[in-house]
Length: 204
Image 1 (cartoon, one colour):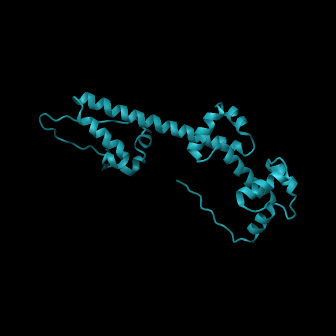
Image 2 (cartoon, rainbow, N blue to C red):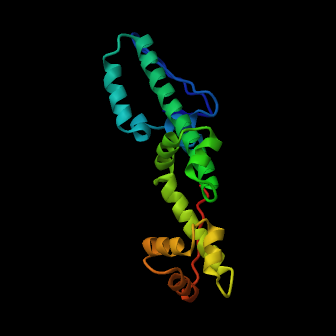
Image 3 (cartoon, rainbow, N blue to C red):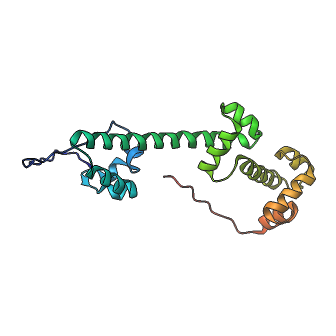
């Protein structure tokens, strides 16, 4: 597989045939999984990009009866990988939009707002985020409660519970114990006494 800025001439010997695939602009990353800039003006073995998929394709191409069948096989694989990548991107966008809503809305409300079933939302969300929408909403509520409590010198835990989406203070305490292993008051005290944490945001 090669991405080139300059023409490369190759003289074919008698009986040789060559099949090439030209991708539409914007398809490269979806099909090959890397930026076009990473392989420009280089010849890269397809197995380095596709792994076992490239090996399996090579095995099938050996059995192909002529260049047309080879081209058809290659086209089918490219289209399948492109469709899968586009679907993954769509699922990721859906999961991120759901995550933004789950901090305040119930799973059923989020699914309805996004026009998908709860079952489909759960499947897509777990695939993209690594946990269920309910688990994510629970953690979002936990973090919101910590922010609410940290913003005040004298914490009204009942008020924090309501503002953060808990049924009541008992519900807040129970979830803090389950998630952090300690009461809200103890955790807040530990955080106030801890050294500052520097968070590095990934930009790629």
